[in-house]
Length: 248
Image 1 (tube, helix red, strand yellow):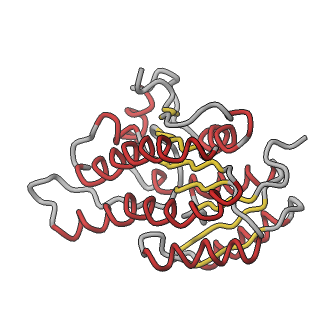
Image 2 (spheres, rainbow, N blue to C red):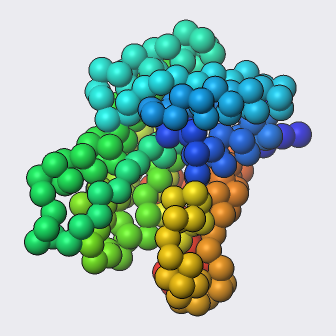
């Protein structure tokens, strides 16, 4: 029996990195997957084919999670195409790193909108079908940076810390309707984004992690499958640090 057999999931920002890893593992575990992408059209189309190869229904939507009306339309379209939504993974996010003294208003606003407002937009939209069926699992992607902060990432840290407070509140509001809301806080995850970094810097980071390696998108995807599945039926309002021991 596959852990997500027959469930329908929305995964935002799934054309690459962590989002792509989650979408693939969800499909492997039997979930029908609706996913969003913004700029990577070709990658989005390729992912759709990869997912359907697992024998599930999959569809990519070009949609900006930071746009309130677009997020609402996305959920309406997914319900029309798939019949329901059981799982929401708010994964879409960006960075605009800079020291506070050099950070401009645009760098602040873009990160807050893409990372935090997007979570509000999608969670608010997905409430309707989940309340109707009286069940659902919402998983929001934060970061260890949202838990402990990081120099040069005040905007990113604020957005990711905001996700934690938001998620705990949603868990309290929707718990009586059997809708769960949890947070995953990834540590240093090695994706194509980190592949562009100086290898000496990457090695230093690895050395500072108790497990002595960076995480993989699959490490995050495994935790997400657990929180999406009925195995975590009594878990809500929690932050799961998937960081190789960076936070202890």
